[in-house]
Length: 195
Image 1: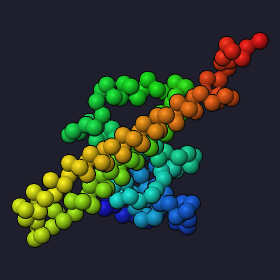
Image 2: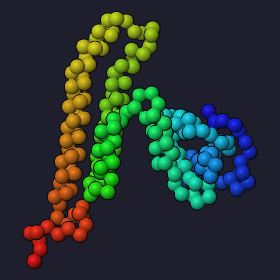
Image 3: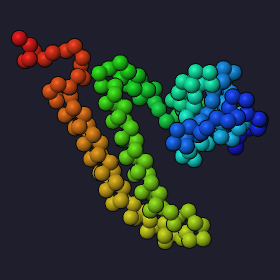
Image 4: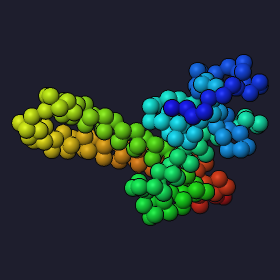
């Protein structure tokens, strides 16, 4: 829910929505975020709610129009990681940092994104299977026992698919590296092609 509603600054009163109807948030030098659709200032918690609700948005610098969306999303992740239960271990974060500047940086980003998408799909399928359990009137101990007995094969199948997709993505990365003419390592000429 947006905090303190205000009239939009004059320069934003007639501003159109972002391209393709994407919600535009403007970030001002005083660190405040302004939602051009709702004509009000919002907090980082409001932006987090937009993410959780699946709303598409972009954050733009109010003066330069530079895209700051990733920066704001990283701020939300930082807040989540420093409070409560972190998702990333120090070891995992160190491994991610090591890929910056590495020739595999772009491929690793795509690999992680595809794996995360596969995991989200896995979670969605499990949610569909368990939907009846969330209705207190429909839930019985027998239903719970039946659900749990069916989960082992389901989980095995879903995890098998997940691991297979992960393996295929890794194999595609290896094939990309092995393709002739691939500029994975700019300036490097393999010894076999030198004269």
